[in-house]
Image (cartoon, rainbow over all chains, first blue to last red; front, side, top):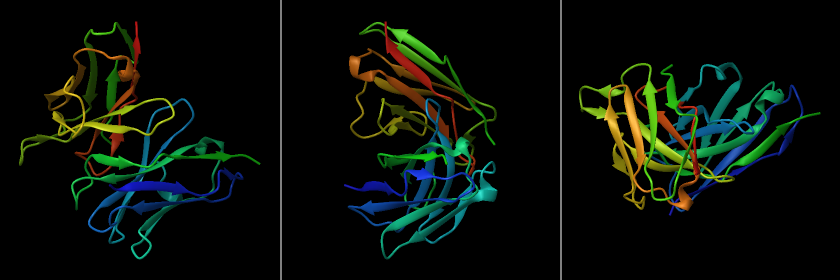
Length: 120
Length: 113
């Protein structure tokens, strides 16, 4: 079955760029939409944005000026970059797959999440 | 953005009793062309990622116990756990996908009384 694994630095300095990668295994990245979601400590879920395997994207307006997502179909990976981070960006970051293929509806497969702390 | 509001923030229910969680959207998430409500429910246990329970407001994901059910239409939705089990202790979130700008409710924490 499809599995997702987030990877990237667990500690990022303020004002720098957070970079994470989600690796898709057990299935193809093609034909699906893929999202990044984050969860600050003790708080709820915040959708960051999604990317289609073709490279088209949609971002949360609250983060749009700082977010860039990309996809590498040859590696079955997609990535998140969040620039000019502050302590407010400290969170667990999840990647997830949307269903059905070709649409950005419910999310049926999630990664385990990776904790990113912003601190000097 | 479509704002999603859940209530209550938390609830404590005895084992075997019914738990009811509400989710209200600021605008309708019912798409008239297909008569589907673009809403899903997730369960998140401590230290785990969210798990999809329900989509299209009332369709249970494969493998989800039938004690979980979703109902509602338009702007008002409900997730019901018909007979609470110990393993159902979690935070539950609704999420709309009617708009391409996806939004979650604030979550409802379910505990054992």
